[in-house]
Length: 274
Ligand code: NAD
Picture (cartoon, rainbow, N blue to C red):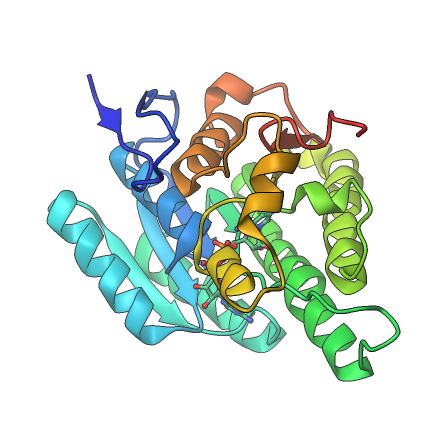
C-alpha cells in the first residue's frame, strides 16, 4: 500500500493514497507547479505515470521540484518552463513547447496564484490588478490556450485551484475573493460551453492549506494560526497532498461524468455558518 504522509503537519493523519484510473501516460501542464499545492499535484500525477510540464515564475523552485520528482520517479518524463500566467504570449509559447515535447496536452492544472489580504479601503489599483491578473486572467489565458489543443485532440480536462473564498465572503480579501469567484464562474461557464468538445472543466476549492503562501500570511500576522484552527471544524489546516488527491480524482476517469463542479476541501469551514 502506498502511504502518503501529509507534509509533516502535526495534526494531519497519514492516508493511503488512492490510485485513480486513466491518468497513466497523460500529458499534464501544471501552472504554479513548483511549490505548495501545485508541487503536491505534480507528485501525485507523477505517481500515476503521467508526463509533466511544470510552469512557474520561480526557476529555483522549478529545478528543485524537478530534481525531487526525478529522484522519486526515475522514469518520469518531466520538463519545466519559466513563464508568467499573466503573459498570454508566454502562455501560448508554453503550450507550443508542451506539444513539441509531448505531442499533446491532456490535463491542465491551474495552480499559479497569489494572495491579496488588505482592507478594501486601502487596496490600490495596482494591487487589485495584480490579484485579478494572476488569479483570474492568468487562468483564462492558460485555459483558452490549452483548450484550443484539447478541441483539436477531441477532449481534455481543465482543473483550476480556486478557493473556498471563491464561494464565501471575507473581510479584507476583496480582490482575492473576486478573482476566485471569477474562477468558479469561468469553470461553470466553460464546462457548459466546451462539453460538446469532450472537455471537462472543474475547480478545487481548498480551505486554508499549509503552504508557503499561508506560512507567509501567518508570519506577517495577516492570518492568525490559532484563530484558523478554532474556526475550522476539523481543527487543523489542510495539506497540499490532500488537495492533490482531490485533483487526481477530478482529473481521472472516476470523475468522467463530473463537469462544472467546484469541489470544496476545507475541513468543514464553509459548512459552519458560525
Ligand atoms: P504557493 O505560493 O506555495 O505556490 C504558488 C506558485 O505559483 C508558486 O510556485 C509561485 O511561484 C507561482 N506563481 C505565482 N505567480 C505566478 C505567475 N504569475 N505565473 C506563474 N507562476 C506563478 O501557494 P499555494 O498555497 O500552493 O497556492 C496554489 C493555489 O492554491 C493558488 O491559486 C492559491 O490561491 C490556491 N489556494 C491556496 C490555499 C492555501 O491555503 N494555501 C487555499 C485556497 C486556494
